[in-house]
Length: 237
Image 1 (cartoon, rainbow, N blue to C red):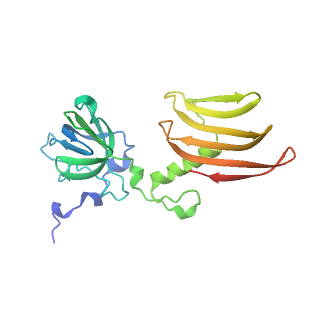
Image 2 (spheres, rainbow, N blue to C red):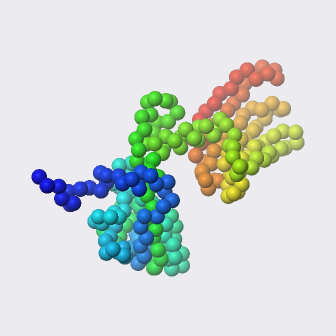
Image 3 (spheres, rainbow, N blue to C red):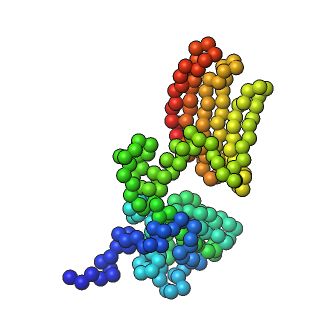
């Protein structure tokens, strides 16, 4: 039996460009007709006359159908009043000229929509049973977990890292590592004391926005006299 194009589901195949991407390369640019609150975007067909649902060359992948549950990213700019602007994940592809997003947009008209694939590592499997740090079964999630675990135990290093210390009297109350280029916080260690002894430290690792906590551990110390006899670590995030 001959296989026809309608028999092929694009979600069953990965192009080299999808697996190679670091999620920064735009693969499709469309003009926006309108955004409709709370989460609908209407676009024009591409220059080749094809849309985003049945296109042979550039179908847009939605979170609802993607194997890893990760839809393509779309950067929307130039909408009237800016109420449709933002970076979103495509939730569903409704038709060749309409899709919904994970997030919220206001009512607007005009603008541009640039589509990007998620990182190729989002769609590569990972066998988590060979270690006990992560339970992720996709490579991107596993690498993220391992990296965050490493940052909890080690100081961030690199040419774009600035280190600072906050003190209260003679006590160090917080250590902070900051991305010099973006001024966003990478990691903090916050200390609390019983008298002159460190009772507890909270290690926190942040996402690139410097606000969202992506890993955190609390370490509580035990003493006999002035000597540390042990500690208990609880992974909070």
